[in-house]
Length: 373
Image 1 (cartoon, one colour):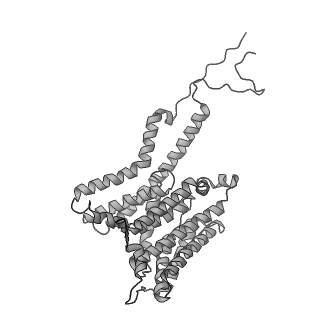
Image 2 (spheres, rainbow, N blue to C red):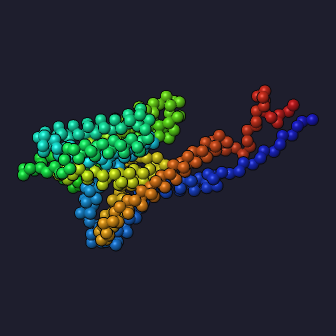
Image 3 (cartoon, rainbow, N blue to C red):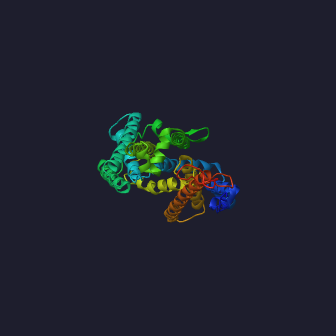
């Protein structure tokens, strides 16, 4: 007598199945481009509220110019975050870099191109040292970079002797200040620096093997080691890139300020991390990315500009940044968890197949259960 196989137990649909393909796609679009839509919405709201001041070319030029250095620093903070590390020394490094440029040009009488090149290379060296301390010293990146940042702040105070570096009556070379103050195609030149840097980081992170290795290190260092990806090597590379970008930002800050202020760099630390963390919720939700960081900086710039034009008090700026930082961390964590859940559901659905009849379970001999004896 032939044995009748038991009827297959229907598989209960998971959250992905309940949402359906259209619901999942809509959720992905909202997550990826919601921040960009918020930028457009804020521009519309402030344009209607402040029609005589906000929707003007002066406001656009001001945003593109004043937010260029925070955008560059946010991109610098984003690179170590890709590997799961944080570089808290970027604010201190920015202050030291811009002071060193002015010190070499004003007091050392160096040619300004050589001074800029030396400071940018110095930023690269500092980044490598940060990476070595974190990886080879086995010190948490928060603690390590906070310590090195404090030391850089001490060096900044030693160079300036607690004061400011002020150029002489002849001022700084015009070619040097034009690095920040000039325009191209009717727009401030610093905006093109930011765009070029973002595109370069996007190409590295999204199109080159180096970027894939950095993301693997950040998502699962143990798995990276198992497949032969050196966690130490690529983490040091991430810190080195961050230091190099910070050095470049210091050059821009020196061309903008034209006075060496030893404490100015700390003002950029919080905006940089807000932009980097908030950027991980846009374009590529759940992971830090260059284009998302640009969108996040745009949201912050539009929001701060609109608030300032509405006559808000000075304390609203740190309040805005602090609240946005908390929101960014929460959204970044949610996006990362949602990305993991989506990958798990996709893998489960792929392994189960689309057929309503599940595959027969193999026996020890490799025959299918339910066959005729």
